[in-house]
Length: 503
Image 1 (spheres, rainbow, N blue to C red):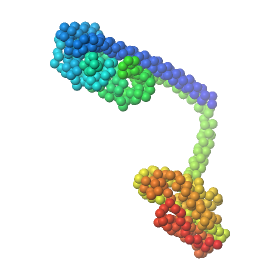
Image 2: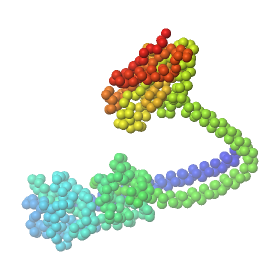
Image 3: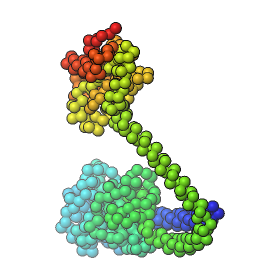
Image 4: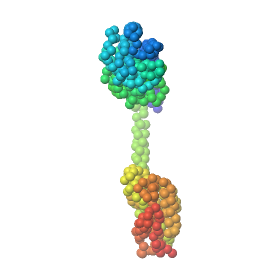
């Protein structure tokens, strides 16, 4: 005992130290990813806000024009062009600034030499503003710029006429290279990942960068489902659908725009140093524990041999008892319904028939059959049929008298028999009627039955047997014929066989 306590104590202390170190490491990593996500969210928010500020200035200049039209005079357009070029040069995140009229034609942009030959009426942001009167900024789906051929993130605002009608769109495009360069500067290890995503479940920018992933859907990913079901921020372990890597992932929504960011560190990379340290400590502790165990082995060897022998004897005894109980249950009980099986029924019928013959008392039998059970199985399946039989059997056990000799047994298939010693025909019929009502009141749905629910039919027979004249099979046959009569009369009823030698 002393050796075991010492060895276990050494292992437990080292295990506790290792688990505590692991928890502290994961906690620190969680804080790091949370802080990284906060910085990424602030960066994205500031980037888009700067672009939107330029847009708001352009919209205000155009809408304040007395002419109230996007196509102002050439000098006015030239001034606006110079302003847009200066803003793009001032803000590195901007790929370009553009203004379109109500038909989607280019009116003015930030290109050094304006090319007005394009039409952007087919773009998602243009369609959005044409059908929505909201004057605020709109974050569109990623597109490839027609002027530069680069992937860009559109930020746009609607232009209105003085009467509120649609006059066009002012657009700022943010170069994805700006986000990519920022994300490449983050220390996230070899297998970490960071991303900017749309709240509607769209991938915008991700490191590692994959151009084919831009604009792809993430609605079926674990992290997006978590983001949708919880608050705007959170942390957890998620397995990436991109590369299968398990990462500690923190996500955070932007304050002013329908976007959110994720920052993730590979769990294997985070725990790599901890695993190495734990392995060294564990090997030392295990070596010490082995030496202590070898030292105490000779001392406790005889005790162990004795205990092992006693244990084997107890195990053999328990196994034998368990086997006997299992065999007894299998021999006497139906596995599906929990009622007595046919074997137990036959043995009990013979015993009770002989007892009734000797004592000159009556013996009654009820044969029960579930109505239209084949149709029930066809409609609902055999699993539902098994559940139905179990429910019916439970109701029959409840309604069956609990006297010695009374027995409810599964006779075969959906047929169930109830043996009632010391019971005349009227008493057995009363028991059968109680069972029929109880099962009808269960209201088990049965679309294939004329009653709409599961019902039973029952045949009842009783006999006062005489030695050498009556046989147990005749009682069963009489109840079975009564059951057929109940079926023929419309089901969901109890039918009794004619009394046989009732005293």
